[in-house]
Length: 496
Ligand SMILES: [Zn+2]
Image (tube, rainbow, N blue to C red; front, side, top):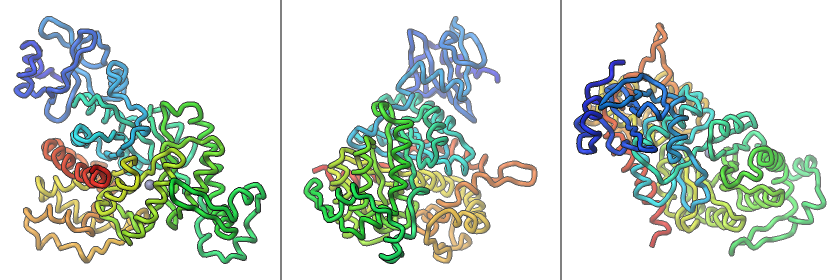
């Protein structure tokens, strides 16, 4: 590409911070390394890195202001150079901090908004956080997800530190892939090793399959444990049931830990997720799983049980709040007892449970959100590009919803979504106050982003990204406000 006159003028003017706005340079991106300059420039349809040649970015050489420069694209090769030159752009282990929040950015454009939140609150962010399912649905890779974050962290000069989470990984190969990409946290999804259906088995059926282990029975059956002021007790039948449900998952998690994490706990955070199961995790089950793992030397940073009630995507908690609080208090005590943090998954928009999360963990928690960041992006489209929003919404209502419904547990009632014909353009953003409309757009993201026409061109993706680029400031404001609201509610629970 032709080097823009803006960049030449900015360099010629001595890289003055006062002139950044005028020349489309991100002011906070102005950095020096060993006396050499590097910064990020907006060249219209994308951002590029401009660096003195000796810094070894790869790209197009040019000279300006009497020096040799490189105009470098934001690609994987240059992301690696950036992380080596500026270590604050590489992820680190943060889960040992009292408060951590995962903010999945499926689109690769949310980090600037997220950073504003974590400049205000003392919680540490997991800025890169994707599951394999999300990678597949968005056609992205772990490399790409982390690279987008590193570039944004550099652009915003966010030096506090952040983590990167390979979320809901299910196999050793997936764990190895995420770690090889530099991810500092792995969330091990044990769901394929947790047996569903035991709840509905009769006692006789359970006992006929249960293989008694005298040492374990001696340890648990008929015993009760004091756990940080809470009591957890085991009888023979409930113990036999939990063995059928969880023993294989315990072996699996212990095996993964030994293979990848043992001795590396300072650099790598291990989360064990047992949340994707058919029934809620009872506190005694949580205790048993944790106690067995700890006694085998496993040191998780976080454990994610499945709580009672429903944590559906992108909407508030559905269920009995007082029961949630009662159980959550015990789950939090168990975590404290064993020295890890409770991880709350599907945390997007669960405003009614947040104060309890803050209170019973006494401000020691990990919270994960993802989908709500996508919804905020689509709300920008509804506001700024109403006709495009109408197209996407119509597509979601048709084929996409029927397809996506196969993968997500939601109770969406499409009939409760107002017909777009009845709404003016100004009213479109109000759809994001309607839970059914939220879920419609939430679960169809992969299909929306991947839809192609007969010539192989994306139908919506490129147009959506250009709206988001044009209104990047709006999106950052929306995230600062919306994710900030999440943190404010949790902090309400413990901050006096
Ligand atoms: Zn989860």
